[in-house]
Image (cartoon, rainbow, N blue to C red):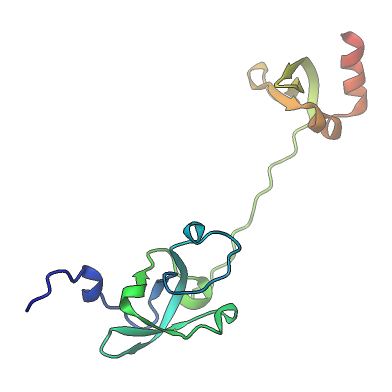
Length: 157
């Protein structure tokens, strides 16, 4: 009798060093929350060895999962389509440099308003045109603007 209910996952095969996701279906993981809120898959993990005619796979698991047996049947694995980790792929490129934006200096406080119970100030930054005025929270303006600028604005009101 031919079984027509076999899905594509039975025909799927992974090679050594492929990245896969592991189903949490039969794993007893402690997450501190309801089972239905835990992720359906965890990983990615690297396949180390193909066992039993490409139906079972030995995975490289982290030390936090050392109590779990490292061999899994193909139906519990899904392919991982993301990028490989740098350490596993062997391509060690230079890390990207993070460019910090220049800190803008407040030139003038134009107006103030209460927006949803918070006090906000409309400010103009040095070197910007009138079209680039921005609202700033009162807690932020105290730390960013010079005290003389705030005092000058409050004396005008």
